[in-house]
Image (tube, rainbow, N blue to C red; front, side):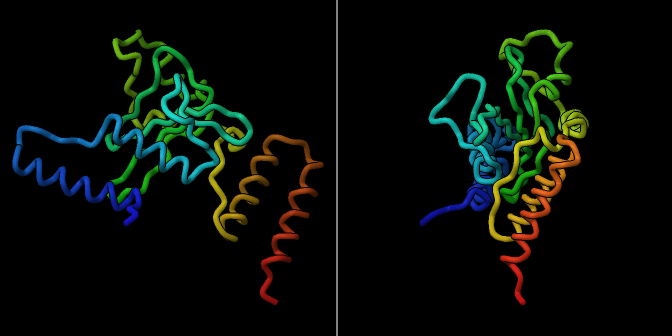
Length: 194
């Protein structure tokens, strides 16, 4: 029997509640390696990111156009950011109790690095950064610099075309619009019910 990530997270949280009830002095939070692995799988399923095989130093995956991505996940109100390097791209998510997630930061590591640039090194080489700070920095990221979400079905294709149209509009001169509009016209023609 296959299990989905949302189902697994829900089951694990039920077990955590039982443990907390039996052992009230302990929190039994689902953070650390398990949450990180769950986050990486959620990101690979949702974004155009292919995870590296095994552990790799500094990055967890790569996009089709070669962007190296470090993925961080939490179920708390903070994420970690490396203290010994700045990743090419940083994608941080907060996993909800129902197994879905909220994107906290998606963009170049240099932008996220602003949160820790004046901090002293730590023993673990990881800095804790509040979600609210990363969300504010995320607002500074241009759409063209974000890692795209995967396309699923016609609704996803339309969403991707809209996303591409917006990002190319930010990044290119006016002449690019004809290609996007032709693509959208072809999409509308193929999906028309008339």
